[in-house]
Image 1 (cartoon, rainbow, N blue to C red):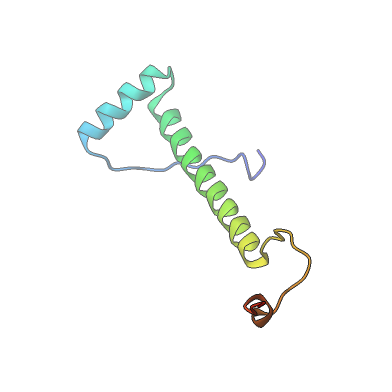
Image 2: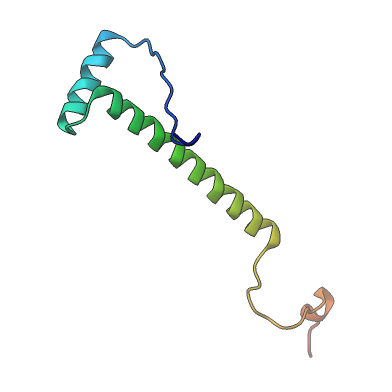
Length: 84
């Protein structure tokens, strides 16, 4: 087994009601409770990591800014001069 595919045992303490509901969900997906919980935890972690990556990317874009067109900077006074 490679280190990334190595599986380790984990013990959880859950209420009987939570376990019963999780068993129903696992049964609906035709998987064992163990596989169901493992998949859910892996999905949660994957989604969290994707969110963090998207957040870092968005913050980086915000820091950099966007070029929205335009060619020259006009001074404020030039914009507010009145022609008579």
